[in-house]
Length: 120
Image (tube, rainbow, N blue to C red; front, side, top):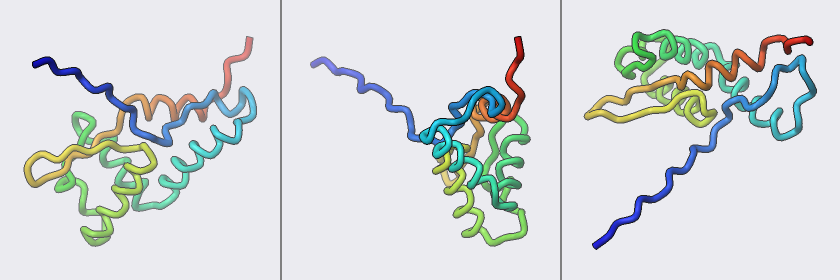
């Protein structure tokens, strides 16, 4: 019996895909995807959770380590879900805990988007 590996699908995400804003105007599609990311980060609790995960040792954090942000646990879960849906965080269940990670490519793309384009 032979088995064929299924191709991995890239998750739909709102990770920035664009050149620096100072290089050229965004296309409608680029603006839509980037706006989803900024909208997710526009909430102070979400921005704080994103920061906690991004700055956590090893670049990932257990939900048990980042839940103390001044809101209830169900609210933390809601905000983490919104960050995942925006493509800013990935998650992995390990036993009873969920671990969240910011992909380095997301941080790099966010940085590129907000930098000035190199001039020749």
